[in-house]
Image 1 (cartoon, helix red, strand yellow):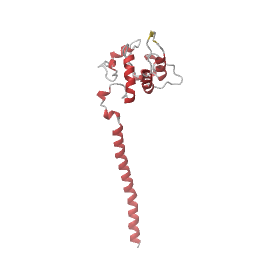
Image 2 (cartoon, one colour; image 1 turned 45 degrees about the vertical axis):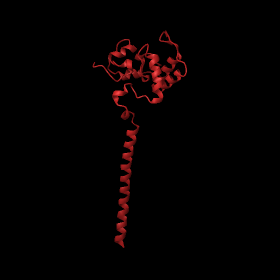
Image 3 (cartoon, one colour; image 1 turned 180 degrees about the vertical axis):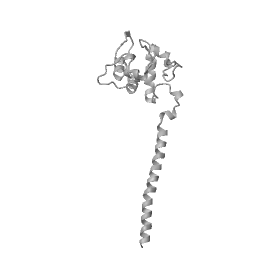
Image 4 (cartoon, helix red, strand yellow; image 1 turned 90 degrees about the vertical axis):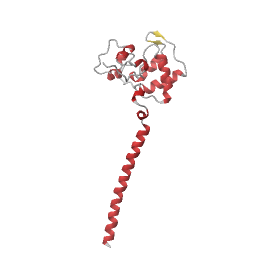
Length: 175
């Protein structure tokens, strides 16, 4: 009788270990599958990305309108470079850096605003709203130890980013 009790207790001790092993294996496999299924970069090779970030389909029309309107006069910069408040002010003001511009009208304005506000950065509470690249904290963080031309202008981006006019800031010049 004592032997029968010992056998049952051994089986009970082995079952939780086996059960835990199955749960861990299942979790690893499912985690790997979910990660590969939801990864944007696995579906889009880096050579095709071009822009700073992959833009989901619901924001792509806003990006196109932004690039068409802003990229005709100067290089359209990624929204991440300036805070949301700067973009809001720029969209509302018809005096664009001393030049009279035709303001965007709805629905294009709404699409551009959704794109810019989603991909722009937040502004620190005590930070002054920057309207120039050289005043942007994020722009400075992206260019550490880079000797930038004075004054920094949107068209000077091409010297380091030869594909900037195509909104590709990943490709850099050999320098």
